[in-house]
Image (tube, rainbow, N blue to C red; front, side, top):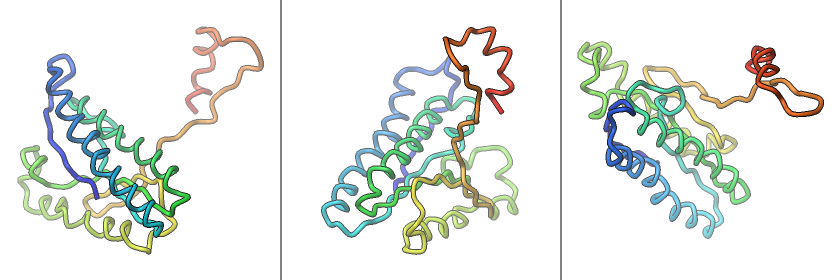
Length: 185
């Protein structure tokens, strides 16, 4: 289970390169640095295994003032999908969670002062999914990102629509504009 994190929230217009770099280093590079040796060990051992990464709704849905954090967490979701493909032959399952919980990173957010909400947003609600993903109960689950928090668990997906196809030639901007609803449907 990979779960390290820091925040340096600012809009992109006001963010320094150092604030960008430190967040990407801790989240994305940190995930790489701890996963690679574990992944290689699992491959060499040839007994399969489970790797669980921590992504975020900020990276998968977006969040104001978190371009650095969102980019790093979206990178972890992509890392998870690619590594799941690489690990399949060796029986290594790779999944991600996008948890929403009251932690030291989120305790200053508005609304978390209510005791009922504090209980509902407890990290204890995250643990059962992690145990499930680490266990043999999830032996057929890989390449999946789960939203988890407040009693809800759901799959977060990146989807490609059916789109539109042009029979021949290059698309023109006007043709794209004329078929944008079909492209996005």
